[in-house]
Image 1 (spheres, rainbow, N blue to C red):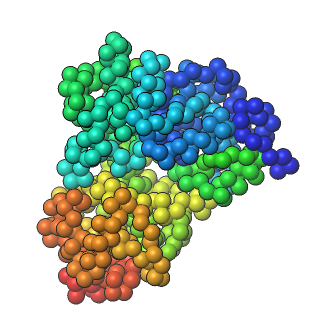
Image 2 (image 1 turned 30 degrees about the vertical axis):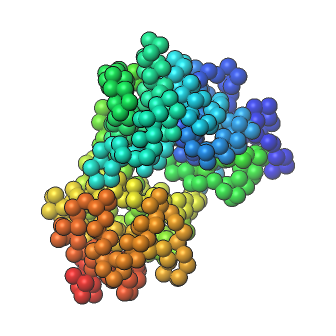
Amino acid sequence: MDKLVDLSNATLGDLDIARPTYDRSALTPGIVHIGVGNFHRAHQAWYLHRLMQNGQAHDWAILGAGVRPYDAAMREKLLAQDCLTTLIELDPAQTSAEVVGSMIDYLPIEEGNGALIRAMADPAIRIVGLTVTESGYYIDPVSKGFDAAHADIVHDAANPDTPRTAFGAIVAALRLRRDAGRGPFTGLSCDNLLGNGDILRQAVVSLARMSDPALADWIEANGSFPNSMVDCIAPATGPAEIAQAREFGVNDAAPVTHEAFRQWVIEDDFCAGRPNWDQVGATFSDDVHAYEKMKIRILNAGHQVLANVGEVLGIETISATMAHPAIRAMFHRVQAEEITQTVAPVPGMTPLAYLDLIEQRFSNPRIVDTTRRVAFDGSARHTGFVLPILRDQLAAGRSVSGLALVEALWARMCAGTRENGSEIVANDPIWDDLQFVAQAARERPEAWLEQDRLYGDLAQVDAFRDAFVAWLTLIWDEGAVAAMTAYTQDGQSNGRASKAG
C-alpha cells in the first residue's frame, strides 16, 4: 500500500476498505460482552455492525469486558484504536477486509470487578454476552453439574460484592438491579457448549443460591438465558495477521482473520429485548439444540480428531492435517461411521452434507489455525465434545473403534513429546496431571482411562477399553500413522494391535 493508516475514529475516512458508515459518536451501549477475543469480534460484533450499517441497533453498542488480569493487554490495544477492529476474510479465492465499529468501549479490569458490575447494573444494558471458553463455566466433567467446590466459586459465594469470576460479577449486577426495582438482563452464552444457555443459567443461579437464595429465585423466575449455536473459524492473531492488515493500509494492533463462513442460531428468549440479528443472517429457532449438536459434534469434536495427532506428528495447522493422507482418511472414516451417526438433520442440511462442508472449511490453507490452539484445553474439549458421542455410540451398540483411536491419540499427545522427539509445551489447565498419567499409560494404557474426572465409568466398558488399549499400544510401538492406517484399512483395533487386546 502507498499509505499506512493508524486505526482510529479520526482516520476512518483515510481508509480504502469498507468501514463504519454510521456515526460512532452517537452510539449508546446495550450489550456488555465478557471475553473480547477474536471469535467475538469476527462473529457477534460483526452481526451487530451489519445492523448498524443498515441504520439499526444504534442503541445496542457493545462494551467489552474481561475478568482476568491477562485481558488488560487486549483492552490496551483496543482502546488505543477506539475499539475498532479490522476483519480480514480469507476466502480461498480472494482476501477482503473491513473495519467493524460496533464496540465502543472496554471496561477497566479491576480486582473485585467493580467497573464490570456497575456497567451491567445500568438499565441501558439489556444483554450480557460471554465467550469465556468451554472450560470457563465451572462444570464438573463427569456429572455435568455446577462445580460449587472450585476455589473461585467458594470465594465468590463468600465475597459476593467483590467476585473473581464473570458469573460472580453477573450475580452481583443482578442483585443491584433487583434491589433497584429493575428487571434483569439476558445472559447470552456464545461458547461451544451443547445447551450453552442452560449451562450459563446453571452457573449463575447456582452461584446466586450459595449466597442469596431469594436472588436465585428472582433470576430463575425473571431472567432469560437463550441457547445459541455459533460458528466461524477465527485463528489467533500474530505478526502475520498484523502484516495482512498492513497490506490493506491499516495499522491495527489486533486485527482478526476469519473464514468466509458464519452461522448463528439463537433461541428467541430475551427478557429485555434484542437487536434484529435475523435481518443480517442470524437464525432464530425453537430447535437450537439440533443445530448445536450437529456443529459441536462434527466441527468441534472433529477439531480434536485432527489437532491431537497433528501435534504428535509436528503438523502445525489444521489445513495441513487435512492435507496429510492418513489423517484425512482417519478423520473422514470416524466422522462418517461414528460421529455423524449420532447427529440428526436440520432444515436444509444432513449430517453427511455438513461433514462435506466442514472438510472443505478445515482444508482452507489460508486459514492458519494452529493445531496447538485447537488442541488447547483437551480436558474440557474431549469431555464436552468427544465423550458424549462415544457414550451415544455405546448406548446404541455401534462401533467406537475410531473414537477409541481419537482418545488414544490424545493420550499420546499428553505424554508431552512429538514423534520427532520435540517437546509439546503445556497446553491444558491440568497438563501436569495429564502428562503424568499419559507417561504411565505408555506401559499400562488402562491408566489413562482410570482418570475418573474425565472418563467416569467408561474404563469399565469392554468395547471401548479394549479398543483404546490396543490403539495406544500400537501408537507407541509403531507410530500414529501406522495406527491410523490400520483403522482406515479395516476399522478395527485388532490385527497388528491384537497383542494388546
